[in-house]
Length: 265
Image (cartoon, rainbow, N blue to C red):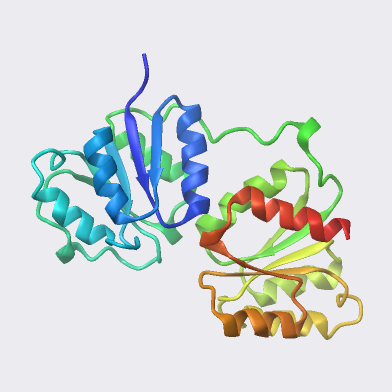
């Protein structure tokens, strides 16, 4: 007997892909959309048992979707978990007064396992399993290579950490420039993945300092950003970044492919 149907309406492709994979392995029927208009239409056609919806969706944002949903007799009773994709508090005053909101998630404050637990709790189930196992060893291709991952987003760091380690890479994690240079003082990684938005020292400042040191200059660097600003892309290239990646525009597998390609050069 199949488990419940879950609709995932998130703007973050990485988080959506990871949750879909894990929930499918738990036996749930999963569908996904990336904008609010499609979320409303999919609710009507799919009649899911639960919707995980982002407040920050294109076309119609999560608050607008929830408001329209509350006036539609077909779908008004479908329970939801609301996600703040930006790490900002949920604006409760924008949500309709309804008992169907089962929980809310501030993305920056949780890990994937906690999201799964909230989903299963909302469906009246106990959390049944840990997160999926890593990639089988015969599919690992980064064995022996070291990746320094500099990112202060707890959820994204956890998601990509599992993916990177699952392909055989040795992962070093830092949450800011100070921690990154502590690692770099002791070892030289094969590649560095560097977020632009970091506390204390920006990713651009970290990149500039890396490329200013002879022993680190040739280490390839992938810059990550939440936004595709042409000025940021040009600045990253000017400072010596090998690749500029917009987080929401790529999948986990695409990021791994970028790592593979740069290390093999």
